[in-house]
Length: 134
Ligand code: HEC
Image 1 (cartoon, rainbow, N blue to C red):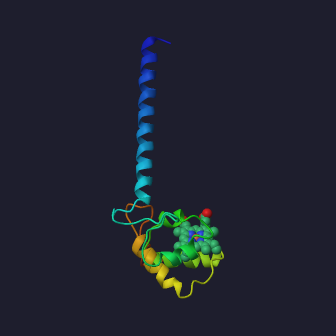
Image 2: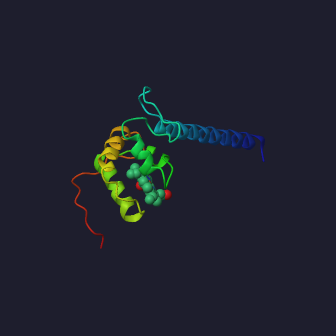
Image 3: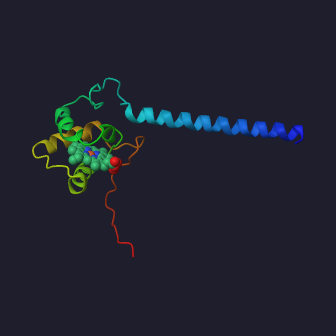
């Protein structure tokens, strides 16, 4: 190989490595942002990683037995979206009836993990007419 080819190959690989590095950094920034509350006055419960607020005890009792609380903190949606997720877990994943705890849990989730443009999930679609694929 001629030297000029070697050099251009070197420059090319360096460019790829730098852009891969930048991408990685962007990803990890996004991740950090996703679990960090925007408001620095928000307190995080050490044991669960969930935001300390009214209803945390109920959420801890009902929502951290089967899976990591990270499934909750990574998932952001509005109250209707949270209810839908709970119903889905009740139908498919053996989640029990939440009884009187349900509205408290929904208030907590909708307030602390609301729908967000920047965190993973958009708000639930409204007024969509779904149709069956043929
Ligand atoms: C009986 C077991 C069980 C309990 C209790 C439970 N879940 Fe789940 N949940 C699951 C399973 C199973 C999944 C699917 C996990 C997976 O995809 O790996 C899941 C997934 C999730 C997800 C991710 C859904 C997605 O689409 O990405 C969220 C959010 C969630 N649960 C929230 C909650 C909340 C809030 C509570 C408390 C009301 C709760 N879970 C209690 C079993 C449970």
